[in-house]
Length: 292
Image (tube, rainbow, N blue to C red; front, side):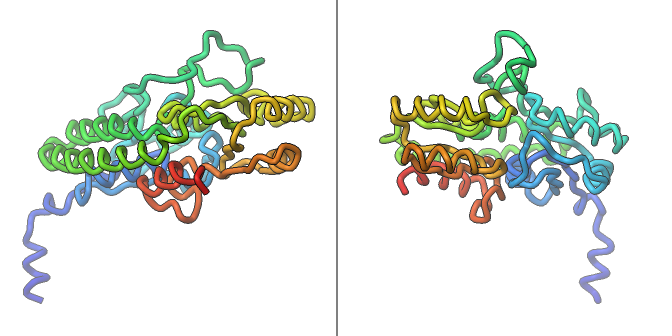
């Protein structure tokens, strides 16, 4: 009882924390590492969902309504689902272009920026490919941005956020060396993908994507395109099909049967597969699965 009464007398500021809403699990993981006990994170999307298409459910509106700030991936990856949530939540702390809103894409050099915008090219992102977190080197950039952001909205704990960032960076660089070693022998390896969500991973380790099962981004595979892709595979001999976890593998299985190349599931985020429970686990999997 004495201990309980002493806790009641402590300043409430000692227990204060920021409730940060984030669009995807990987953002939540970084935010937790930087913020630790001064931040709680609310992740809007599940890791095994298609990141392009999230249903703006009432439960997500409630989560956003109670947030002190919002961190999003950006690059228009959330364009189909996050703006309606922000509007319905009616929370001024989660509105774009405010001090409590962070778009992580602002610090990224995009790959595959389109020269022109035409709906005939499929579901093209105007800024370029938005799956930039799958280059593990970019995680350092994103962590720095999140630390700066937290310090800006919670200057009282700036030194703590800076120290947490420093520890994270040291640990992450150790992993980067290990992952680079894992992937060294894969440089130049040719792959097929369903959707080109592994572009940054491929770029980081020198893998070459020679085709996608989607004829255009967001467009389901046609019989004609599938047959053309089989010809490409038989000619160029890629190692495998990199497949996401949220699209059907039916066409990939057909291609695999016709060509003999295996399908490798490539999770895009924490929780995309049951075994992927952290950012380190995500890249451990991605950098070793090709050897299996």
